Structure formats: C-alpha cells, structure tokens
Length: 112
Length: 117
Image (cartoon, rainbow over all chains, first blue to last red; front, top):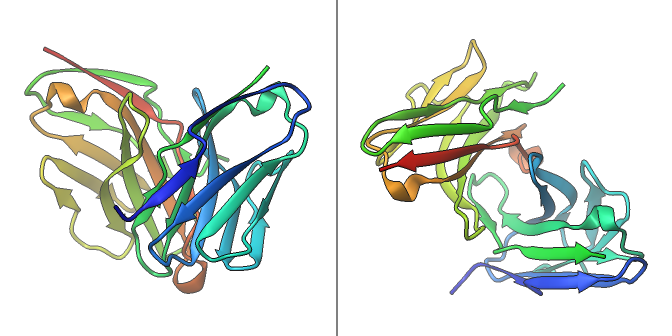
C-alpha cells in the first residue's frame, strides 16, 4: 500500500548511544516532516524538508539532525541520545498546495 | 502565544449523543487551513476534516462537522451520534500561509474523548 513507512517501530537506547530513524514515502511528495509526540504536548515539529537536499529546523530541533539525500527518504538522527528524547516520533509527507498529509505509524523510542 | 489552543484535556460523552471539541487558533495570515485528526489508542494519526480560511461553508464529513467562526478564530469539531469507536485523542492543527509556504502543521495539545455506553 502507498504511504509513509517508518523504521524501526520500537527502539530502546542507552543514554549516549546514537541511532537513525528512517522515513520512506512512495507518493512522490515534495515535503517531509519529523514530529515528536509527548504526553500533554501534542505533536511538535522537529525538522522538515521542502525538497531533496534541503532541510530546515522546526520547533524543537536541538539534539537531532536530519538528511534528505533522496526525495523519498527523510532520516532523523540522534547523535547522543538523552532520556529527554524518549518519545513517539512521527514522520509525515505532503504535496505543495494540497491539504492532505500522510503520517507514518510512528516510532516509539525509549532512552534509558 | 500558542497558535492552537485546545482547552479541554478530557471530555466524556454518552453513546449516541453529540459532542463538541473546542479549538481556537492564532494567526495573522489571511490564508490558512484548519485540520482535525483522530488518534486512537493504536497510535496512528487519522485525518478527519479540513477547513480552509476562505471556505464560506462549514466543512462536513459524515458524522464530523467543523464549526468555523473566523472572527472568533475558532474551529470546533462536532461529532454527532457518538459511537464507542470515537473514543480517542483528537488534535486540532493549523497550516499557515499559501502557495509554496503552505506546508507546516502546528498542533494543539489534544483532547481525550471518552464515549460511555
């Protein structure tokens, strides 16, 4: 099925470890986003991309890096994980001018 | 200032009754879009309804309607004839700007709706 696929779905990290979350979409969408969801906080934008090779900071970018080397993929990296990064991470994609957003199923990350 | 405010952390409704979930927004843009998403306990984000700032009629999608009051900057979600499956977290979101800048979504903190049998 067409959509947004996030890998992995669950992960437990130790403080200081690094990891990369992968988001892949097959809808040829220009825009891609990484959000984090914390209890009582809604979804907050971490980083986003408006096209291949471009990225920009969102509301809560500290501690994260991103890359969009291919149009269909958007990677979120944690260089040195901290317990404060324990969260559910959502990737989403959209097209210019359209109002539809497609969300991935989320990645639940726990940093101990 | 928060761009999207959902003042009801939790709401309860009896099955088959209607319920209104509140959302107010803050923007200086003339062109913007308002969204409602449902997040059941399984965690996925489900799009419910969309209202554009220039749309004169309130949006409706089945049992969902959006009560859009532009002057008051409110975009309340009305669910008619509630069902047990409506129990979920509901998020209001806004996209500001138009054309090429029309992309980022800003979310409210959500309202947890519980439908009682």
